[in-house]
Amino acid sequence: MRGFRFLLSRRWALFALAIVVVACATWWLGQWQFDRLADRKERNEVVRANEDGAPTPIGAVLGDGGGVAEDDEWLIVTATGAYDPDDTVIVRYRTRDGVSGIDVVVPLVTSSGTSLLVDRGWMPTENQGDAALDDVPAPPSGEVTVTGWLRANGTGSSTEVHDGSTRAINSAAIGAAVDREVYGGFVELRSEDPPPGDTLEQVELPELDNGPHFFYGLQWWFFGVLAVFGFFYLMYDEWRTARRGGRPERGSRKPGPRTPGPRPPKVKKERQSNHPYVRARREAEAREAEDRARVAQSERSMPPSTGSITPETNDAAGESRKAAARPNSSGSP
Image (cartoon, rainbow, N blue to C red; front, side):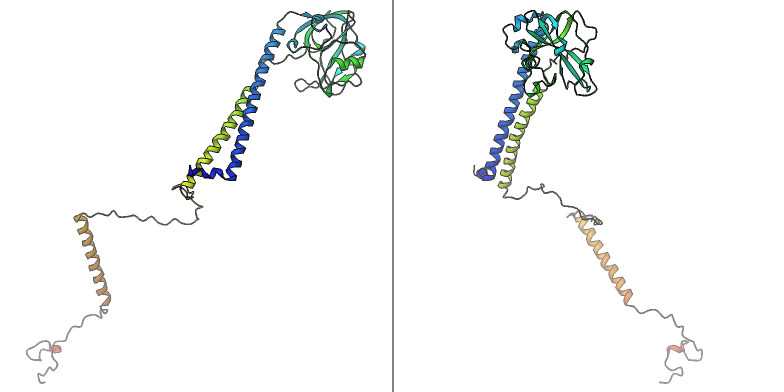
């Protein structure tokens, strides 16, 4: 364990603490995504069951004056009464497929005197502002039976009602604005009997898929595993470097930048051999080189040639015909 004493340094201690924090955070975020996935699956099962059920009278669901229970969300309900178009409320900033529009909410006064807020549908507008009530299609007059999906109230500051418009539907806020007693929650219209002359576009039903929560959870856990793996790899690299005494491993040093210029010629190395034949050939070649060197040296040391002289001959010079070869042609000393 002496090789891992560097882990006791302040730098590595802080590094290890940071990895622990990252690993815990990524684990929690991944588990949070999987919990959201479980909640979504449970909600989708409730919505499927409620959408496929038979219509339930509104009084049997909201007769106690309470709000909409979580298990009753998207339950199909029915109610009978008369619309009061004078208390129509516009819901702004409802965009579909990039087109701005509004939802139209009209109170349906039931026989009990309590009004049910009905979101009759969506209509496009030129901008995100309020539409004039004269442009809104009128609901059916007289007694009307409506069938729709039960929804829970919106929350937050977006539910405030100003000049007959709001950004989110809340039955209590709208009831106070129009001075009516209303049921908790509201209904998104599916059908009306009798049908109106001009209809609005029906509400969009929720998507019953699992969403991206599963893959988001895997990604968070992968980041945590990657952080832990990176820590142990760096720890191993530090231990390996300390074991070599701080010297880089052979072959691990990267070559520096190459200086531009001509490459030196490659020198062909002769193969060395101690074979007698090869050794005798090298000696003979050495002797021939020495002989050639001596011949070349002797040729350089000789004076330049001036030509040849032909001696003159004299027939009267006695016995020898080569008079020029003797010092005195007369024969005396």
